Length: 234
Image 1 (tube, one colour):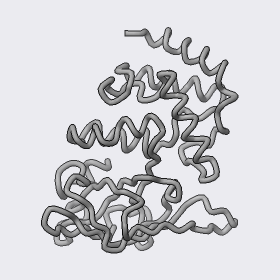
Image 2: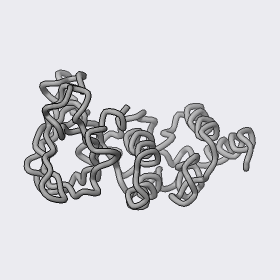
Image 3: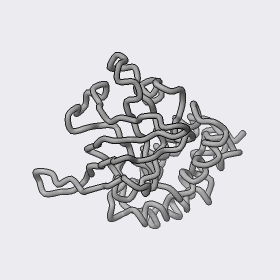
């Protein structure tokens, strides 16, 4: 295995030659106007071997360690370029899939995350819950081998440009607040999903609100155990 020091040197050399191809360092939130540039940058990172650094090779990664990933992030910070397309996809969703995903879910999504094909968003916060995630009211009700989702999410980053989303919805309304919540993988282009820019007090539209009306999710959309979404999210 390549040592962390050797990998760091490789990363710095590649960035010295390619940093001018990167979009500005926008942080964790991919601005809508930089979506195409962000995807192109992520593809360049993937082709060069700097995407999914500690992910298994079977899913397009390098099979290295989290120390190697940390060295990459620091090297990117030194030259002020994004280390990956967006945090929700490359960190949160990827980590959840690697930990809780079935082989089929991992095969369907992981490679597409790190090669820049799919942008992911996070569907957690709600208008009446705010940061109190346990108070969410979006419902996912079982209908045979599928789930029907109804609710509204707010403060969604990347919603307008997202292909997929990670969703927390209540599947057992009789359970205690932190229980009875499940974690789903959502196609943001599915029927019943409507995304609208959320205008802030300063006039900016950095976030979105997402409305889910009778959205049908297949059984394979459930990530982790039913009613254990809080554990998966944490």
